[in-house]
View 1 (cartoon, one colour):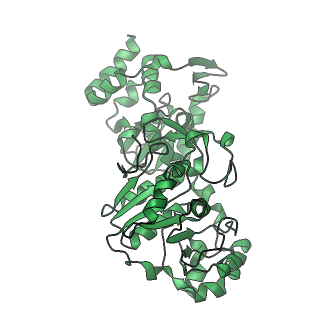
View 2 (tube, one colour):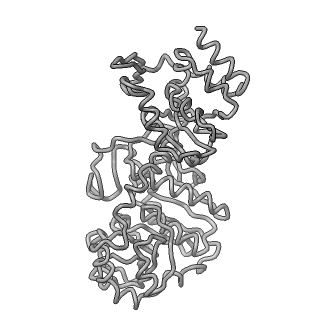
View 3 (cartoon, helix red, strand yellow):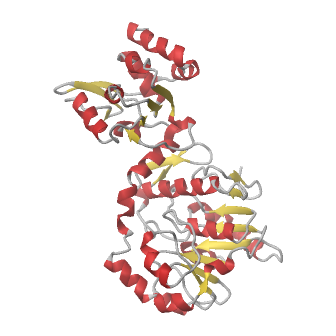
Length: 431
């Protein structure tokens, strides 16, 4: 044990003894660690440089400059080599700096090699594993290298950080002044005025169990039994997302309600034959020709997005929660209808078993399987391939579930993402 490591762990043992024991149990030997030289030097972990190899301090200063000036509280995700911590602590106005470990093995390696006891001993510093927290905290800075290197335990917080960082970019296409969006809204105004209000459905199914059916690969394993359940005299209410409608019809299953919010949905996704007994819940921008051909009842509503502000004022309707995916308003509809129990099918947010969706070809509804570059943890704690927007949708669903403790939420497959706040329905989930 080096003298540097001894000094570092002495501070940790005094201030955070439980955390120290966890760090000592980490195994830095699993890392491919290299010293990388430039005008300066840094550590490369598994091919990812922790900092600049030319000027670590200048880089850390640029990072510090992006934070709110004179803030008394800052949150730093990732420990790096200690550079940003030192610059932040040089501010006389900073009262507390909370540092979060994103990869325990990486931080343990840094403790072995470099002096960190100066910032660790500062009384303004709090230190913890990111994964010990349910949510991220603001204002924050997340070290880019450690977002890539985050380990499994801290992956859920990593995903929230990335989603928050991308938020402005993600919302760029949802301006209420965009000419294309205004045109999409205008073409459906006549139907919007005459169609029923989604709020008419609110409270209509008090205490009933609702099946919310999405299009993830795990849906396929449940189709035969869903067909049997659909034929029962007393059964749950079936609500499906638009892209699940065709796979259900092809299996002989007619849902009670279909929810659609995406202007790219066409007759291909929502064929109108035999739709007379299926209610369609939609939001403006859906093609008016498709809507007009639908034979069953139509209910219109909005999300809380600013893009609907003008039409909300002209034609008041109920609102449903949307967090980026159609699965959010489908679930919110179930809750607002009075569901006491919501069971999810095909809510995978990932590509388990190397498939993208049930009933659709690879890439038909989005990127192809080989384009997925990201991962999350499935219901068995294993990594499964996904894409960034799926992780954001999962995050928003978990936040929604946390806000509705009065409803029981269940998942039906361990193949897809582990969804915080849900249990596994033993009658539907294979062991």
